[in-house]
Image 1 (tube, one colour):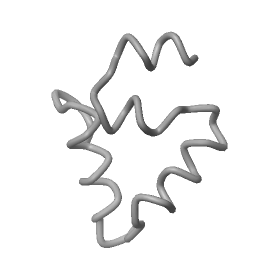
Image 2: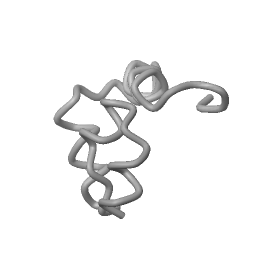
Image 3: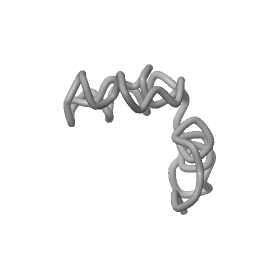
Length: 53
């Protein structure tokens, strides 16, 4: 589902999946529990993502 796509694309695809149905805030909350900065993913900021990790 996420292969070959930018994070900004696959996050929306996951959120809109019929078994998930999450808004941005819901997905961001889940990502935060994994110590992932959601804005770096949503902005396709790989370097920022790596720095924040």
